[in-house]
Image (cartoon, rainbow, N blue to C red; front, side, top):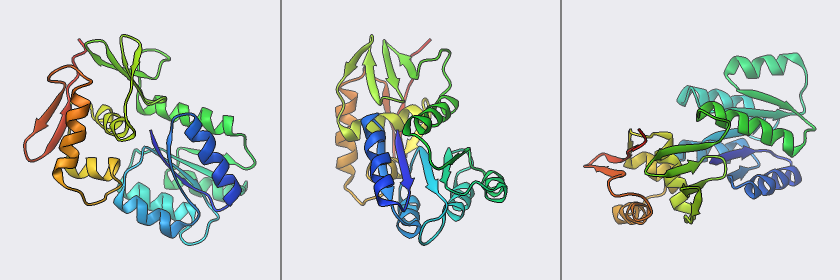
Length: 223
């Protein structure tokens, strides 16, 4: 699960990032709206956590930009502003949650987990998405499971599998993979093929399909 954090308080930014990473989230953190916007343009994220009062583009301007690009991606606003005008504007612009400072990290985690459950609905309280042949992916812990046992993944393999799980049975373009796994960096096609091959070795034959000249698809074999 890849998160973007925008918070200009250096100490709070660092604490949130560290504690979220301890929960197996991938966190890219920024102190100002200019650098965060540049990253958003070239990369993809699962959840955005935005402070309002930051240098450059503020959190509400960032929220508006995100909603113009992505209607459904979860956005949490964190702010010391507790007045109804800011809260109303944030929800009018499309935020999913508004967390007033000061807050505990556990409260933030509860809200993140709730948004994950909304985005990846399962038939139980588990965050594990089953996709056949005994395989499952825990979207919260970012773990690949086989019959309940964890299969070790590298950092980029986790990102790639998380992305494919988001679009299960749908083709994910090469461009989307590059933006999500490599933050939009230019790279040789062999780099993508290499990580696809390594991930294929950890799954059943035929689960990851190459859609020629378009991208890749993770096929669910869950019946």
